[in-house]
Image (cartoon, rainbow, N blue to C red; front, side, top):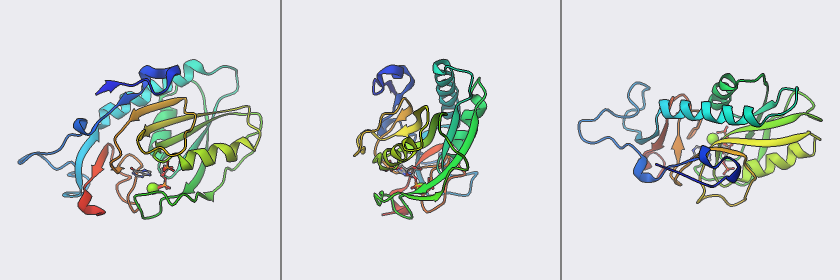
Length: 216
Ligand SMILES: O=P(O)(O)OC[C@H]1O[C@H](OP(=O)(O)OP(=O)(O)O)[C@H](O)[C@@H]1O
Ligand code: HPA
Ligand SMILES: [Mg+2]
């Protein structure tokens, strides 16, 4: 595990993980999916629950430290993947915030983006004049966030910042200006903590690597 300088303004915030950081069970070790009914389906634990939670506190403190003005930031959670993240993030923020939800989908039942982002549920209110913080679970190709940033920009917010828990730097096809990133991770397909494959595994409290036999 080492620090990354991918985002200059908050460089020390991003932790870079490589495949070597994945905790793979050896013979006799407990299966990472044990306890949640996913035995034999995960290849490894990539980010434990404790490490995730500590990072979320650090992200929340950094966002709060940079927030100016009396109006609470409006957190826009990108459903469904960011649902766990936004609830922990909002509770870790030492300043008041408000929450909105938008559901978009580009992956369906595949492990690669279709490139077509669909709005499944739009925001319930006008964001004009508001300081918006998009809260996203993962930047993979970057297509979802790039599309969403442009879409929200047309609605006249005072500002838009992005907080992403995970990013795959080697998979990014469209660069997006992301102020806060929790972890830069390898290109393996990850699940847990909101992230799914075919709607499964969102309920895991940690981030794991899906066994290749589950989608090959
Ligand atoms: O950078 P990208 O390649 O666009 O991938 C990232 C997006 O893909 C996932 O959403 P998905 O479309 O699977 O919907 P979900 O959140 O409901 O799982 C994830 O939650 C991000 O929103
Ligand atoms: O690695 C991933 N896992 C789950 N959902 C995703 N959406 C984009 N990348 C991923
Ligand atoms: Mg998904």
